[in-house]
Length: 109
Image 1 (cartoon, rainbow, N blue to C red):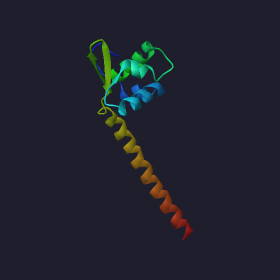
Image 2: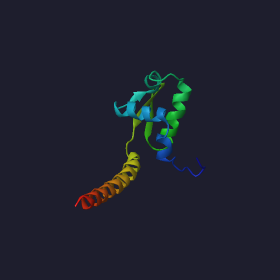
Image 3: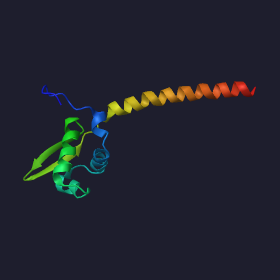
Image 4: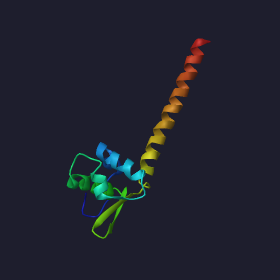
């Protein structure tokens, strides 16, 4: 990440299966403490924290301190970029499949 405080790319952030699993766990709960998230993985707290940092840099996760505990919460807003990207290609394939269907129907006639 650059020094001018640019956000990490959301596609990069979700590219890792561990981070996608973290997103799923956070989506299923309002807020989760770090120790509960760590318990869901066969890796140490430091490794989970590094993944959460990447999600945080992409704006996908917010954290807050409650006493000595850090709690994490999902922010779904950056996922809109992914949804828009997928929607574009979904429309692209729908249009092309419709064209293919029309061509096949014309050949049958």
